[in-house]
Amino acid sequence: MSSAKMFTGEEIPLEMHKVRIVQKLRLVPIEDRLKAIAQAGNNTFLLQSRDVFLDMLTDSGVNAMSDHQLASMITVDDAYAGSATFTRLSDKLTEIFGTKYFLPAHQGRACEHILAKTYVTAGSVVPMNFHFTTTKVHITLCGGSVEEVIIEEGLKSKSTCPFKGDTDIAKLRAVIEKHGPQKIAFVRLESGTNLVGGQPFCLQNMKEVRKVCDEYRLMLVLDASLLQDNLYFIKTREARCKNKTIREITREIADLCDIIYFSARKLGAARGGGIITNSEKAYRAMRDLVPLYEGFLTYGGMSVREMEAMAVGLEETMDEEIINQGPQFIEYMVNKLDRKGIPVVTPAGGLGCHLDAKAFIPHVPQVEYPAGALAAAMYIAGAVRGMERGTLSEERNPDGSEHLSEFELLRLALPRRVFTLSQVKYAIDRITWLYENRALIGGLKFIEEPAVLRFFMGRLAPVSEWQTKLAAKFRTDLGNSL
Ligand code: F0G
Image (cartoon, rainbow, N blue to C red; front, top):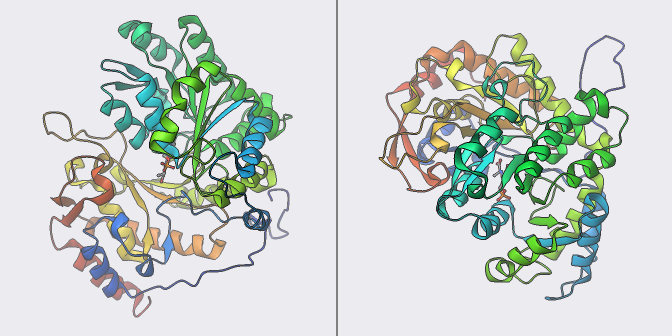
């Protein structure tokens, strides 16, 4: 992909696949978009697909599947117990990660549920480079708490640090010393660290985390949901790994872990999840929860079709020519916006392009959810659906006050191999227009606020008439364009 140079010197990511199945899209006029976002309670999770042009909400379960994946879904073994499909998937996991045991689960958060139920008790602490929304809630529901030990650079939106997902080793030690190792349920590392903008960790840093775990006899648990992007970044940004294959890097990572879990809605480009380990003790400790919460041990709540597709998807993840598409498209989008002076998280990570709402609309206070407001504005401006990743995605403090997030990001996910470059260019254009008109964007307030994971189902309203004014300005600037 990256090795084809353009004669004109233009730098574009070149697709190494062709499109053979398509889905028709609609781009509804801005007046309809105003109505749709109001009906959705200004929450992009509540928009209907028919009203969305570019769905950049997530890369979860919506990456394009390959012809080989689709073909594999035809020959499945539906047996409730002992299915050959399970064996094929389990063998593939063993081949790639070198782990003996596999516990299937219906998706990533189900793995988090099982892990938390098994290892987290009242007063437990889980140090991690950075939390993910569902991870944190599962840990706190079991009476535990999360301590974030990411490097300082990881919390800066603008940076040139290639591995912003790295752990601050001194911070990790300090957290363990502060609570005492007996209180630490396990240490968690998240690959392609989601909430800081899909930022990777490097292999060297992971080795240092492992050393600390060995010293204090702690388990190291890897959330490998976004491992695909992280592998690509280790291969291309970590000098000492440049001559290693993706397979070798994967194996080195796996050998450092006690337990690995993943959302196969991301890793393996299918729909499902799983926990893998070499430890019989860990396997036995968690095993009984799978038939209770997920399904029998040879499907764990997953469809066998998805399991077959996952096995093929995992194999394809070992191909650098396949996994480079996401990071290269994201880099294109991030760099174009960055060069225009539009605040985006840099360097480009995996998962998607992240607009920094604190810098984009500094006049909107954090208690009025700038990232949520920018998500609504982005939808109005272009029927592009992104996801708020800021204060709205946090849980309130026990006293009811807002837990202000480090970051206020509007994540525009780029599901792999889904969008064309012209669609990415359209998104860049509408973001540029929005930035020119940022003074018009106002905040949001809750009108219906769920107690847990409020960002999924909560409903909000604009604090003023700003959305109507924004739409009117669009008509002035862009005439009768959709
Ligand atoms: N861990 C990470 C790092 C994730 O990104 C996700 C999901 C999960 C765990 C939970 O997995 O959705 O299969 O239950 N992230 C999705 C997203 C929801 O849009 O970023 P799941």
